[in-house]
Amino acid sequence: MFGVPSSPARLVVLISGSGTLLQALLEACADPAYGAQVVAVGSDRVGIAGLERAAAYDVPSFVHPYRKGSDRVAWDAELTELVAAYQPDLVISAGFMKLVGEAFLERFDGRIINTHPALLPSFPGMHGPRDALAYGVKVSGATVFLIDSGVDTGVILDQAAVEVVDDDTVETLHERIKVAERRLLVETTRRLATGEWRLEGRRVQWSDSRAPTVTTR
Image (cartoon, rainbow, N blue to C red; front, side, top):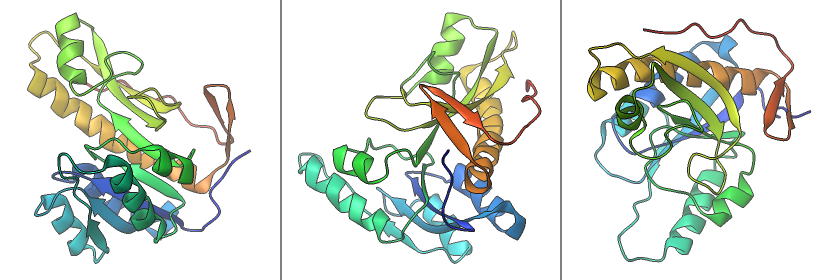
Protein backbone atom coordinates (compact mmCIF):
# COMPACT_ATOMS: atom_id res chain seq x y z
CA MET A 1 0.00 0.00 0.00
CA PHE A 2 1.31 3.42 -0.92
CA GLY A 3 0.50 6.89 0.35
CA VAL A 4 1.93 10.37 0.69
CA PRO A 5 4.11 11.01 3.77
CA SER A 6 3.49 14.74 4.26
CA SER A 7 0.30 16.40 5.42
CA PRO A 8 -0.54 18.48 3.54
CA ALA A 9 1.12 16.81 0.57
CA ARG A 10 3.82 18.92 -1.06
CA LEU A 11 3.27 19.52 -4.79
CA VAL A 12 5.75 20.82 -7.34
CA VAL A 13 3.95 21.74 -10.56
CA LEU A 14 5.78 21.96 -13.90
CA ILE A 15 4.31 24.16 -16.64
CA SER A 16 5.11 25.55 -20.08
CA GLY A 17 2.23 27.88 -20.87
CA SER A 18 -0.90 29.58 -19.62
CA GLY A 19 -1.19 27.46 -16.49
CA THR A 20 -4.92 26.68 -16.43
CA LEU A 21 -4.28 23.28 -14.86
CA LEU A 22 -2.02 25.00 -12.32
CA GLN A 23 -4.77 27.50 -11.57
CA ALA A 24 -7.21 24.69 -10.82
CA LEU A 25 -4.72 23.17 -8.37
CA LEU A 26 -3.96 26.53 -6.73
CA GLU A 27 -7.65 27.16 -6.16
CA ALA A 28 -8.17 23.68 -4.73
CA CYS A 29 -5.15 23.98 -2.44
CA ALA A 30 -6.53 27.23 -1.00
CA ASP A 31 -8.93 25.02 0.98
CA PRO A 32 -7.02 23.51 3.95
CA ALA A 33 -9.27 20.45 3.76
CA TYR A 34 -7.96 19.62 0.30
CA GLY A 35 -4.86 17.98 1.77
CA ALA A 36 -2.18 19.34 -0.57
CA GLN A 37 -0.14 22.50 -1.08
CA VAL A 38 1.69 23.78 -4.16
CA VAL A 39 5.17 24.53 -2.79
CA ALA A 40 6.82 25.50 -6.09
CA VAL A 41 6.15 25.99 -9.78
CA GLY A 42 8.78 25.25 -12.40
CA SER A 43 8.83 26.21 -16.06
CA ASP A 44 11.00 25.68 -19.12
CA ARG A 45 9.92 29.07 -20.50
CA VAL A 46 10.18 32.64 -19.24
CA GLY A 47 7.43 35.23 -19.34
CA ILE A 48 4.47 32.86 -19.42
CA ALA A 49 1.08 33.42 -17.81
CA GLY A 50 1.46 30.35 -15.60
CA LEU A 51 4.32 31.99 -13.70
CA GLU A 52 2.11 35.02 -13.10
CA ARG A 53 -0.52 32.72 -11.62
CA ALA A 54 2.08 31.29 -9.23
CA ALA A 55 3.17 34.79 -8.19
CA ALA A 56 -0.45 35.79 -7.52
CA TYR A 57 -0.61 32.99 -4.93
CA ASP A 58 2.86 33.79 -3.52
CA VAL A 59 4.17 30.43 -4.67
CA PRO A 60 7.93 30.27 -5.39
CA SER A 61 8.87 29.56 -8.98
CA PHE A 62 11.92 28.77 -11.09
CA VAL A 63 12.67 28.70 -14.81
CA HIS A 64 14.91 26.05 -16.34
CA PRO A 65 14.97 26.41 -20.14
CA TYR A 66 16.38 23.83 -22.49
CA ARG A 67 18.38 25.30 -25.34
CA LYS A 68 18.41 23.32 -28.57
CA GLY A 69 21.66 21.45 -29.00
CA SER A 70 22.65 21.58 -25.33
CA ASP A 71 23.29 18.54 -23.14
CA ARG A 72 19.89 16.98 -22.49
CA VAL A 73 21.19 14.67 -19.76
CA ALA A 74 22.72 17.61 -17.88
CA TRP A 75 19.50 19.60 -18.29
CA ASP A 76 17.50 16.72 -16.82
CA ALA A 77 19.91 16.34 -13.88
CA GLU A 78 19.67 20.05 -13.13
CA LEU A 79 15.87 19.95 -13.32
CA THR A 80 15.88 17.01 -10.94
CA GLU A 81 17.86 18.95 -8.34
CA LEU A 82 15.73 22.08 -8.74
CA VAL A 83 12.57 20.09 -8.07
CA ALA A 84 14.12 17.98 -5.30
CA ALA A 85 15.08 21.14 -3.39
CA TYR A 86 11.38 21.60 -2.56
CA GLN A 87 11.03 18.04 -1.19
CA PRO A 88 7.89 17.20 -3.15
CA ASP A 89 5.60 14.33 -2.37
CA LEU A 90 4.14 14.58 -5.87
CA VAL A 91 5.44 16.21 -9.05
CA ILE A 92 2.69 17.28 -11.42
CA SER A 93 3.33 17.89 -15.10
CA ALA A 94 0.59 20.41 -15.90
CA GLY A 95 1.13 21.22 -19.54
CA PHE A 96 4.91 20.81 -19.26
CA MET A 97 6.13 20.33 -22.81
CA LYS A 98 9.48 18.66 -22.14
CA LEU A 99 10.08 14.97 -21.63
CA VAL A 100 11.93 14.24 -18.41
CA GLY A 101 14.89 11.87 -18.46
CA GLU A 102 16.36 9.00 -16.52
CA ALA A 103 17.64 10.99 -13.55
CA PHE A 104 14.27 12.64 -13.00
CA LEU A 105 12.35 9.38 -13.34
CA GLU A 106 14.64 7.59 -10.91
CA ARG A 107 14.41 10.33 -8.25
CA PHE A 108 10.62 10.67 -8.38
CA ASP A 109 9.56 7.22 -9.55
CA GLY A 110 5.86 6.59 -8.97
CA ARG A 111 5.24 10.20 -7.94
CA ILE A 112 5.14 12.07 -11.29
CA ILE A 113 1.62 12.81 -12.47
CA ASN A 114 0.58 13.89 -15.96
CA THR A 115 -2.66 14.51 -17.86
CA HIS A 116 -3.60 13.77 -21.44
CA PRO A 117 -6.59 15.06 -23.45
CA ALA A 118 -7.75 11.64 -24.69
CA LEU A 119 -8.67 8.27 -23.24
CA LEU A 120 -5.34 6.48 -23.18
CA PRO A 121 -4.01 4.18 -24.50
CA SER A 122 -5.90 5.57 -27.51
CA PHE A 123 -4.52 8.67 -29.22
CA PRO A 124 -1.27 9.35 -27.34
CA GLY A 125 1.06 12.16 -28.34
CA MET A 126 0.69 15.85 -29.04
CA HIS A 127 -2.65 15.83 -30.87
CA GLY A 128 -5.05 13.67 -28.87
CA PRO A 129 -8.28 15.62 -29.58
CA ARG A 130 -7.46 16.03 -33.27
CA ASP A 131 -6.64 12.37 -33.71
CA ALA A 132 -9.73 11.22 -31.80
CA LEU A 133 -12.01 13.44 -33.87
CA ALA A 134 -10.40 12.34 -37.14
CA TYR A 135 -10.85 8.69 -36.18
CA GLY A 136 -14.56 9.27 -35.63
CA VAL A 137 -14.89 8.20 -31.99
CA LYS A 138 -18.14 9.00 -30.21
CA VAL A 139 -16.51 9.36 -26.78
CA SER A 140 -13.18 10.96 -25.94
CA GLY A 141 -12.00 12.39 -22.65
CA ALA A 142 -9.11 12.99 -20.29
CA THR A 143 -6.62 10.73 -18.54
CA VAL A 144 -4.45 11.22 -15.46
CA PHE A 145 -1.51 8.84 -15.29
CA LEU A 146 1.89 8.18 -13.76
CA ILE A 147 4.76 9.23 -16.01
CA ASP A 148 7.19 6.53 -17.07
CA SER A 149 9.93 6.40 -19.69
CA GLY A 150 7.49 6.13 -22.59
CA VAL A 151 5.24 8.70 -24.23
CA ASP A 152 1.83 8.61 -22.51
CA THR A 153 2.37 4.96 -21.55
CA GLY A 154 2.33 5.16 -17.74
CA VAL A 155 -0.10 3.55 -15.32
CA ILE A 156 -3.55 5.12 -15.62
CA LEU A 157 -4.81 6.64 -12.36
CA ASP A 158 -8.22 7.80 -13.54
CA GLN A 159 -10.16 8.88 -16.62
CA ALA A 160 -13.14 11.07 -17.46
CA ALA A 161 -15.31 10.62 -20.53
CA VAL A 162 -16.37 13.47 -22.80
CA GLU A 163 -19.01 12.96 -25.47
CA VAL A 164 -18.11 13.88 -29.04
CA VAL A 165 -21.00 15.70 -30.76
CA ASP A 166 -21.73 15.85 -34.47
CA ASP A 167 -20.69 19.48 -35.00
CA ASP A 168 -17.50 19.31 -32.94
CA THR A 169 -14.30 20.86 -34.19
CA VAL A 170 -10.92 20.09 -32.72
CA GLU A 171 -11.15 23.35 -30.78
CA THR A 172 -14.64 22.80 -29.33
CA LEU A 173 -13.89 19.22 -28.35
CA HIS A 174 -10.57 20.17 -26.79
CA GLU A 175 -12.16 22.95 -24.75
CA ARG A 176 -14.68 20.54 -23.20
CA ILE A 177 -11.92 18.02 -22.56
CA LYS A 178 -9.89 20.72 -20.79
CA VAL A 179 -12.77 21.30 -18.36
CA ALA A 180 -12.91 17.60 -17.56
CA GLU A 181 -9.11 17.42 -17.40
CA ARG A 182 -8.91 20.15 -14.75
CA ARG A 183 -11.56 18.51 -12.58
CA LEU A 184 -9.94 15.10 -12.97
CA LEU A 185 -6.46 16.34 -12.03
CA VAL A 186 -7.75 18.14 -8.96
CA GLU A 187 -9.71 15.12 -7.77
CA THR A 188 -6.96 12.57 -8.49
CA THR A 189 -4.36 14.72 -6.73
CA ARG A 190 -6.65 14.94 -3.70
CA ARG A 191 -7.02 11.18 -3.62
CA LEU A 192 -3.27 10.65 -3.92
CA ALA A 193 -2.61 13.22 -1.20
CA THR A 194 -5.15 12.03 1.33
CA GLY A 195 -5.70 8.35 0.65
CA GLU A 196 -3.89 5.10 0.13
CA TRP A 197 -3.53 3.01 -2.99
CA ARG A 198 -1.66 0.05 -4.35
CA LEU A 199 -0.51 -1.07 -7.76
CA GLU A 200 -1.44 -4.51 -9.07
CA GLY A 201 0.40 -4.72 -12.35
CA ARG A 202 -0.96 -1.77 -14.32
CA ARG A 203 -4.08 -1.44 -12.19
CA VAL A 204 -4.41 1.06 -9.34
CA GLN A 205 -6.48 -0.08 -6.39
CA TRP A 206 -7.72 2.80 -4.24
CA SER A 207 -8.54 2.51 -0.56
CA ASP A 208 -11.45 4.96 -0.87
CA SER A 209 -14.68 4.58 -2.78
CA ARG A 210 -15.98 7.06 -5.31
CA ALA A 211 -18.96 7.34 -7.61
CA PRO A 212 -18.17 6.79 -11.31
CA THR A 213 -17.21 9.84 -13.34
CA VAL A 214 -20.18 11.28 -15.23
CA THR A 215 -19.86 11.67 -18.99
CA THR A 216 -19.50 15.35 -19.89
CA ARG A 217 -20.89 16.95 -23.01
